[in-house]
Structures are given as structure tokens and as C-alpha cells.
Length: 399
Image (cartoon, rainbow, N blue to C red):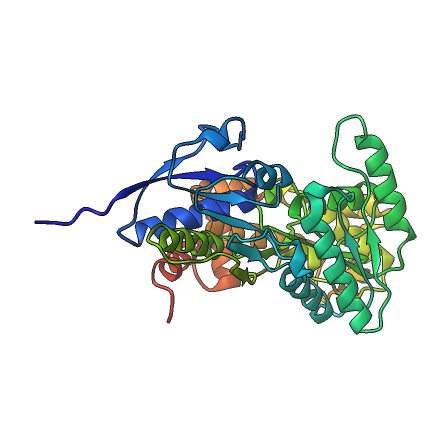
């Protein structure tokens, strides 16, 4: 007779509007799929966390996001097994008492971003954070990690928190961001504590005419695909190990449900990788005309702009701009536009399920056939072959 594993009723207390929480939930699901564990999961239908009545919930266990201080308060006296997830703390006393805690390693996240900017050749650095608040404790931990790293290296740590995000304060927030950006020495590398924060700063740079990444190289944290669609310049980001966090939290709760003690366990999960995009690929350029032109090209290359339009934006003749480009970049303005369009097309082939004709149109190519011709010339393969190679690499990664 087959033994059927017991079904446990588990509550997941997360706010699925955030890519971080969704990644952890996905990791929990992946753990369930790879084991014989049988859980009946309680989640709100809109994947948001509502705590009213949670203390009366008649279940077997809870996995919860303890970065939200209200969740920690609501679960303080609960008798069920609880696994907490959240950000790491420098001070061990900040962790919840007697509860296993799976943490994203805030120090390692900032260190990965910082080392990437150093590798890009930068020597000045700043951090764009969030206003100090209990709900933003993880952001303050990232600030402190940034300060420690720069203090270690004998560098000045510039930290700017700015205003919170709200409709009434938006204009003032943008004005203050631009004023801060203009006050910074250039070139400079800036680490934003989230992609959402990085997107705001990137938009402020574009509004103020500050060249990214030549004057300001920018990197965020979260690798949020939604944020990437809202930025004209592709945003670099540190990828958090949220899938591993979710799997680890599920494993701990599974063990607790079967009598294994886990209280007081702290597990730090490092970032997965850095997704390097155009926003942090700093190249020292001394030519202001080329910097202005690149700023315009990165924003509008996929809209079919021509060399004459770039020259008009910069305010010089077409022949003069071509001369500057050949001296500084070793290519024509047209080549630079094409290079950016091809990079956007390659990214679309890798990360979207769109048809090649749609990708060609979105990236400013007049037809799929023209994309096919140019892609083959530059990459040595057709767009379809490139897409097939990417899909094969995802399905059958090398050991």
C-alpha cells in the first residue's frame, strides 16, 4: 500500500507586487515541485499580504517576509512553526528571536555592485538609498555596507536618501535628485538600493542631460524585468538569490513540521550574479560631443533615428560629428546606432517570446529580412539560430 505524505496547510505572507517577494515564492514552489512535500498553500488572490485575523489562522506553518515590521509584530505570539525571510543585519541582535531566518546578504549585494563599478574603471562612488524608516531597515543595512566598503578602501562614501515616492512629492523629488547628481564629481559610479530607485535616478540623469554611463554609471539591485522596460538605457542590476532563499525557507519549514529543531538558525544567501547592461558600462570619454551623442543614441536608437538627427541634437554639423566619432570611437555615428539596435535585438531574442518580426520592428529595423542580413553579418548567425542557441543553453546548461 502506498504511503501518502501528509498535507500541511502553509501560509505565505508576502507582497507579490515586488520582484523580490515573487522570486522567493517561486523558490518555495520549486522546492515543492522537486520533493514529495504536499502543502496546501494559503495566499491572497492578488498575492498581497493582509494580516487581519492571521493570529486566528488554523494552519500548520508560516513562511513570511520579516522585512515588513508589521508582519513580525503580527506573528510575535503565534504558536505555529514560522520561517522568516528578509534582509541580513550587521548586528546579530536585530534578527527575530527564536525563529529561523533566511536572509539575502546585503553586504554581498553591495559588494558585487561596488566591485563591478571598480572593474568598469571608476574611482568615485555614491549610494542612492531610501528615507530612514522601520520599513526600510534593509536599505539602511545596504547603506552601511556601502560605507564600510569605502572606508576599507580609504574613499569618501557619498550617500543620498532623497524623498519617498509619492505623487504630491514627485516633482520635488526629481528636482532634488537632479541637484544632487549635478553636485557630484564626474565620472562617478552610483549604486541604488533597488532597481526602482535606480530607474528614478536614471530618468533624472536623462532629464538633466547627464550622460549615462560616461558621466554617471548606474547599477541597481533586483534585476526587475518590469523596471527594465521603463528605462531607455538598459539598467545593470545585481540579481538576488531569491529562488535559493525560497527553497531554503521551504526546506527549513519542512524539517520543522517533522520535528527537527531550527530555532535561531540564520542562513545568508549571496547574490546570483550581476546582469551587466549599458547603464554601468563606463568608458572614459573626454569628448563632450560624443558623450551628448551617445546619450541621445541610447534613448532613441530603436526609434529609427538618423545621423543628421543626432548631429542636430548635439548642435554640430554632421561631418564634424562623424569626425569626432571616428577619432574617439573608431566608427561612424551610423555604426554606433546600429550597434545599439543590434544589442537591443539580441536582448529581445534572449529574454522575450516575441516573434522575430516584432523584435525587428521594436528595435527600429525596417524589416525582419534587414535584421536577418545585419545580424548574420555582425554575429555570424541568423536571429533564429541565435534564439535557438540561447534556448538550448537554458534547457541544457553546461555542468
